[in-house]
Length: 174
Image 1 (cartoon, rainbow, N blue to C red):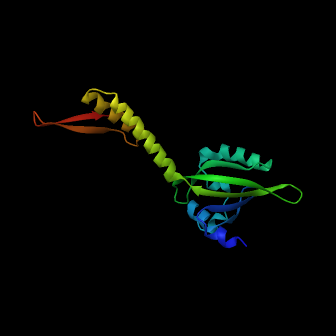
Image 2: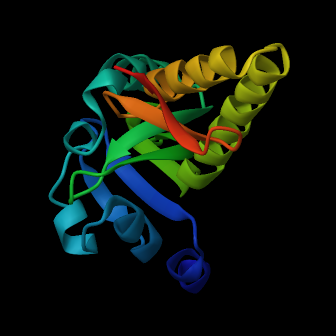
Image 3: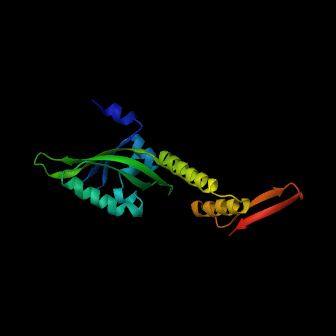
């Protein structure tokens, strides 16, 4: 009855068995993980999550075995090695004897939203930092140090044109 809906929505829908092996995945789930549906069905959840998430997933799995549903964020690793952040809602699946037999989950990729929020926070921090500085030398140093600590770069520089002397001044940091 709802098969067409599940297969056409943009959110990933999965079923896991009690050992967290995928036994159902819709097309959106496969797309989010970067696999085909068939490839995903040959995986265990631990195969596609970031190593730093293992303890989180272990705790969430224990909760599901106790019959507890949950919502949380999870970092996954796509087939191509790229990490993505997904928002997950997971519910336990119980058999007629009320025994835990697996989980059903729905999720969507929130990587872009998380990155946008982080970028806004970084811009706010930088704006606040720069607004508290009075000299151009301090400002250049603060901006360079900020960029070096918030970006994947090892060294940087800012060129300043001194219009009086018609010279170019390099402010650098390493």
